[in-house]
Length: 444
Image 1 (cartoon, one colour):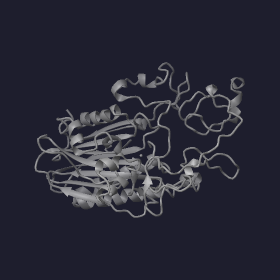
Image 2: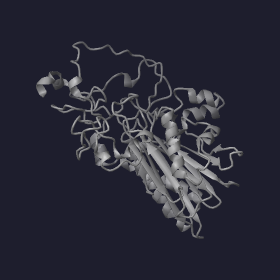
Image 3: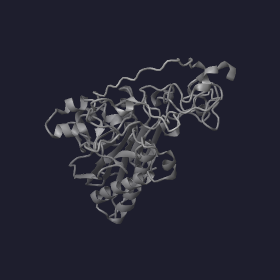
Image 4: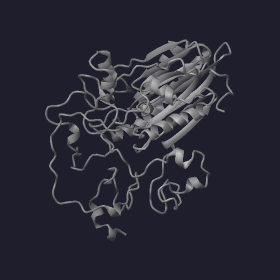
């Protein structure tokens, strides 16, 4: 077959997703791209325009946890962005494609973009759970999602067409007593970099407590999917251990975020990272948001731009956003320089000013306590959802009326809302009824 693809000897990266290739590859190991269709590369070399006047950001538990996405400066440069020039190693070969080029952190501002310059579309889409069905028979799961005819081998590739199959983290669901969460890769990203954890605990007085943590891996950082998973696990385990001991929920939340930070920081010291490290890489990073619900208290904690919303069962009462983003947009609104609509319409809106990671300037966990006077649900989510229901009123409109008694169904509906809106990012949402429901209760 090599005689049919004479141009492939010169290919070092996949033309579709830029994954490193090996000699003799017929299909890309990451996206399944048919390399026999690659046209011969031209002899000339394109000129690289040095234009850095515009900042650009691209889209880009279990109860413990089921898994489910900082880089750039908010100040334009005078000449060009580092991402305009492709880096090479000392031998002249291109750097590995998943390593973001350029320094993602501005020492002056401590702001970084949470999405790298990645393509909006990938050849292999994640299966849409609304179409493919969430509970497909086991035998159907072995068929290729691309050609729908070939069998999938043990390595996750179609024996007929060679396509890589969706990863386990592409779509995950979990229900733990009265709490439920769903995470989906979305329709544009090549992997799911979100993670979540949900669980229940019994307080010293015998009353129930529900817990949910959602983390969004920062796509411009190294190993964002590992960062979000590590943070979700660490925070969840810390909460479930502290609450039965009688630790106040707000203190438990603060300590859980610190534990999550330590877990993410540790990833930067792992040998695997050391082997992959180059000057163009940055430490694994993620955002975090969590909620603890008891019989009379609601506590939220966060770092970054993942959010928590309050939606009462009685929709005649207004919903509310419970968190404040660590982001460029939030700073502009807080300073009175822009309206909320203007700030979040700006291309710099998703530049985050707080995250978990070894390169974070200072860890400042935010926590807040509330005592709702009526039943409702807490929606804990990444920006993959709230981008399509940003205002509290919008979120209240898309949360099903029966969310308090059917949390899993409601989480599916919310993920579907984001996919219907375009699914530009990973989507993760947990639904937690208030007041806390005794263990054993859950979705109808």
